[in-house]
Image (tube, rainbow, N blue to C red; front, side):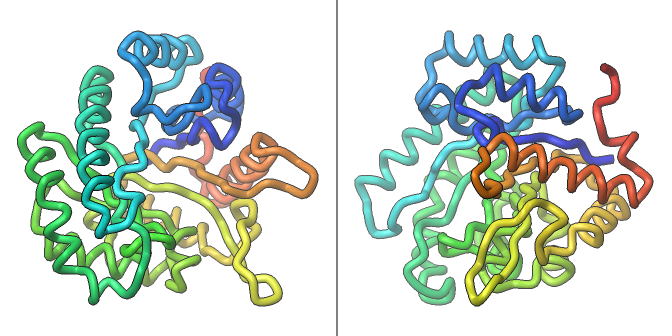
Length: 279
């Protein structure tokens, strides 16, 4: 059975408040990206200890730490070097928390994957070597603003890369924005490579792509969750809603989307098995 998580800054930059909300919703895990106005990679060792203590206080577990690695241009060599240094720090912090993987991107989109695949493989070699040396996994997020945006592209890239330490962070909402049908087509391309999942819903309204509360968009999450249950996926599914209701807040958007997830899981008869009901 998979576990439910929430990315903390999709609620608030106030980390403790986010943890209160996430615990109240019934998730079991928190994904840590930006908090206290900084990316997690910028935290000191003592601040990471504080993060760990707060998470335990609210009865949660950390799924992973999120950096911005390779959200930069592929030809920017200086930025490439800095991002590798940042990745070293994220791996160090992750290991302090006994975590097994971190998220990574594939550079800002400037054209089709076929035009950049060889260069992308070359740019990834130092981080693949680092991951293999550390025995630590990198999960490539399919990100619509980056070179690898769809499930099909993620499969092609990781097959070419050929490292068991590089796997997929599957994001159906991003695939939708990248003009792929996330389920079943995108998912089928990567289902045996997935180590982590982000959930957000989307739709096209009057010709424009827009984020929606989970269950209120065009991504087939009922089919997606059913497939995950059938596959035996036991990793974390993290809510990254991106949706903010009109005149509302990120917290309200997260609450609405989480209710949407619970509604779908209830239809599938597994909500009580996934939610933290120990309160």
